[in-house]
Length: 181
Image (cartoon, rainbow, N blue to C red):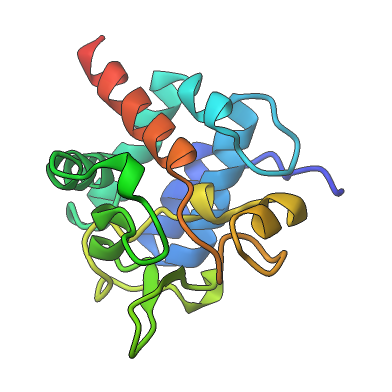
């Protein structure tokens, strides 16, 4: 696997100012990987739980500022906390996804039976027309081939698969703890 480029917060700021949301999402993943000294691959729940608060705050500030409060980790955390209150994790299934995933527009629902598969990454909406909290998303989408298969995907990341609450919960809990420090 090729090493991750050495992205900087300035690189991210430049892309966000130009509303290059998809490229900024990829740089965000690179910055998160670098913060936990991960060279490629997917971020695990443990990686996310140990993410430096300073990294999360810096990235979030850039996303929220550039999107006028539409995107960013803090937006995702607020939505997650609001929607998680009544959700029973034991009820998670393809028929009952976490309401956060639907609220931020990450799911494609099938009809007539409402199965909630994740959109393929390239099918996400990389514009301000996307639902609040839609981005950044690659931190959650990027999975190894094997992890993708385990979540019902097609070996191409999260797309086509089902929810994995471990990563989602880990980042949201980390953000909550960082806010308390």
